[in-house]
Image (cartoon, rainbow, N blue to C red; front, side, top):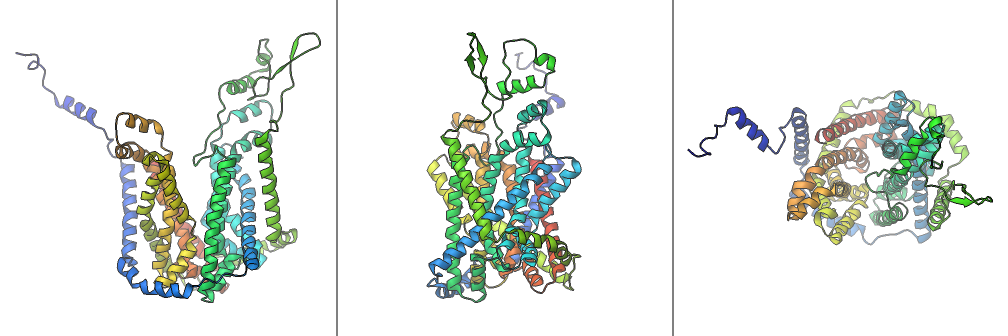
Amino acid sequence: MSALDQRPPLTPTATSGATAARRTLARPGVPGMAAGLALLICLSGGIWAFIGLRLNIATLVDSAGNAVDFSSRMLPLDFPPAPELLGLLWQTLAVVITGTALSVVLSVPVALLAARNTTLGAPCRVVARAVIVLCRAVPDVVFAIAAFRVFGLGGMTGVVALGMHSVGMVGKLTADAVEQIDEGPRTALRAAGAGRLQQITGAVLPQVLPSLVATALHRLDINLRVSVVLGFVGVGGIGYSLATAVNRLDYQRAMALALVVLLTCFAFESVSGAVRRTLLPQVTTRSRRPRWRGRAARNATAAALPPAVARAPGPAVARAPGRPPSRTAVTSGGGTAPARPRTSPPWNGARVRRTVWLVLALALVVVSAVRSGVSWQALTRAADSFLPTLGDFLPPGTAGTGGTLLDDLWVTLQISLAGTLIGLVPAVLLGVLAAGNVVGSPRVARFFRTVILCVRGVPELILAIVLVVVTGLGPVAGALALGIGSIGLLGKLVADSLEEVEPGPVRALLATGARRRQVFFASVLPRAWPAVVGHVLYQLDVNIRSATLLGIVGAGGIGYDLLNAARVLEFGVVTTVVLMVLAVVLLVEGLAVWVRKVYA
């Protein structure tokens, strides 16, 4: 009998053990199945909304005649005289710059209170996080309606609306950056006897500053597109002129102004991107912690030792934590003594360049604030009328239109789901082609990044205006506008998530001879999948708020009720609409957080 025949037969336990050893995928758990079911429900809802709104080829073919008629009514474009156009453009830019600067000023203290490592306590953190969520969930148009009651027609209304709404984004990202700082420098300052304020100014803010500047520049791009929407509620600038032309059905002037806004968005985003790459080369889409290791870490440890140990004789020379050893100088007795260490970086070319940019930026903010009408008298008037204005919006009410509001909220949700579904496939494809680690060609990645940039530069309100004229009033125009807008934002987020995947496994697979397609499906996509799913749900969150705004120009949904309530001074209805939209947004945001946590 051979040795092979003498082996003991496999028992059921051994067989199951061998099967378990061969398993390459984990068994699906209850949370994973529940998250998958939730995503399937969202996908089914998008398909159902797409069918329910009758978004098909036949609808687009039927609108072809309207598109030809609109083109004949739009051409030739009627541009305002150059001095008037430049004045409108400068007024809009002044409001955008001042509003963004206001959001940064307000976001820093809120972010410090919202961050886990700098808050004053759990109650302060909860309140600060609630303020951030509220500012992000409330549409900027609602802030503009409230500010209009205080400041009237003018730039100050736009500054307050943009500043308050931007706190939701700038505050959240800044709080996340504060929680990701390296605690070493702060620990060293605390060990040296520094107070809380000294720790924040000396160790926290210097690490957060690059991320804060990058976020502010990105928010500046967004606010430029949002300023067009605010023109429909009385904020001066090129958006107000565009709204006036649309209300007069003067499409030659309206489309000319829309083209100016489009080109300005392209130029502004390109310039701000170049500024970010020049001034902040170390900042990427993912926050990076400073490298504070080695000798600096040992200095912090030494600073935290008891005084007796710190004064123990030895060859080490005392120095400021985190700084290199100081130079030595020859004394009159022929010995050496430690030279006085520097307390500030040298004035080299890089520091001079940063200082010049800082001075120019501050000067631009001051000039923009003056042009926007920011003054002490306006702020005093706002303080006196704040409580009466708040009383106009409370308590919430329906004015007998509760059923209509619920129906229109359902239409808004349909528009959002259908728009997200329309943009999902093109956005994912463009995001994959724009990721350099996936396509392997920098030229191809740059080309598709440019395509995404061009799509992102088109304000959704302008798309909605054109599509309302082409397809008629209703949710079809809103869904198509959101679908096109989703391609830009979601495509960029997908590309960033794919490029942020750890390169080690990718290089290992390439070294074994795997093809790009195999590397993508085996290594890149599985690691980027949780982030991509979160971005899709975030896009749905954004589209719900955007669908509310697009209703202002006739794209259907609850936004139309919001604008009508503001026009007839039914501000209790405005509050009800905001609370309804806020509830839906928080539900989607909670779903996104839970799904990302399950799949992480």
